Length: 460
Image (cartoon, rainbow, N blue to C red; front, side, top):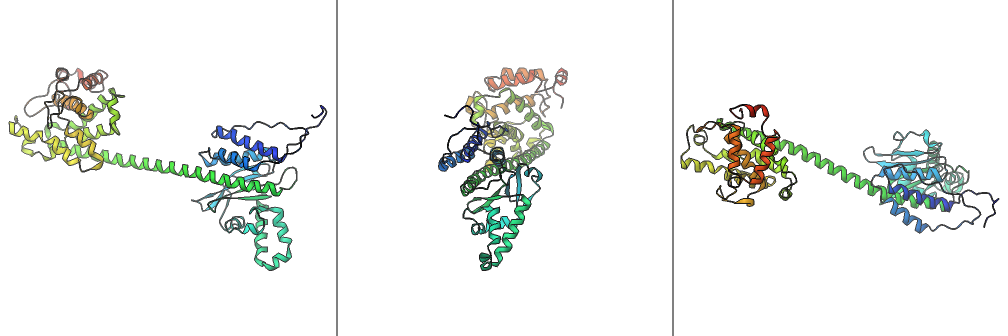
């Protein structure tokens, strides 16, 4: 046991390695926060123990893989090295595909703060980058890293330089570049034999040289970091692709909806008595659906809101197959003519079924004239065998029909339409949908209070 009067010594290299692992672990627990690493206590009098590199690297790899963003991992490594390994400069250059260069992404230390992050970049023919890409750095060091002292020694080895005259120029260019970067040690980060980045370390503040063991440690650490960074970049790129696909879908979906609106308007234009009908029905069904939010039956749809909206817009698309003399007849329809009109739901579904994206919409359109008691058409479906969207459209469609002028009758008031829908709840209409309709009406979602107070009902 050390005496009370013993002086504290600086932490050993092995102890610094342990703190680096602790720092990485604590930062990985909350990578989005600038979490400080606990300041290590200075140990007293204990002999240095050899570090188990295999255990350290295994722990480091497990910690690195937790990072989902490359910049968080890089900043953590640079910050930890700067705080506890005490070098004048720590920096990382990372390959940037769009700029075809290696960009400075983080820089710490007394010398490092003088180098602007994001503005310094090393092009592929830079002597340091070229030496790593061509694996020429292994001619200088068995670790494949570039050590300033070893580069200097290489320049003074006349016997080697005489055998390889071009090596002198390369070493001189590397030395000049390391001088500009204030680099004492440059460590390559390889991923699948490709140079992903470069870890740059300045001199030790203590003035001591980096040992072979330390250099080997940084090489292994850099390659483990390269794998973690590549994985993080892959995740980030996939997320960007997902966002791009989502944006593309939204643009295409917007175009599709606008096309559906235009088609619905064209169909409405064929029937002068129901002009604006599709737009109103679509508004009504969305208002009704808002009161049914959370209904378990909605979960059966891949996208209920979208299916409902498009089905409402196109519910009368089948009228395109009905002759004009029947569609625009000014008097009451004959039984034969009414049978022709009834075909519009089947015609509409037939038009849409071949379109893969509209198969579910086609089903709703086919069944929007079915009745809850099974007396509707075309298939006589009953109760909850009728799809939910079709049951909602049925109520909205009926409300608009009652409050709109027809060739064979005048429109009725909103109050009369409300009473009619209540009377047919459980027979023609789904009682749950009717309740949602009435609730939406009370909230002013179906028709404004101003229009409701007009005795003639909904004003077209």
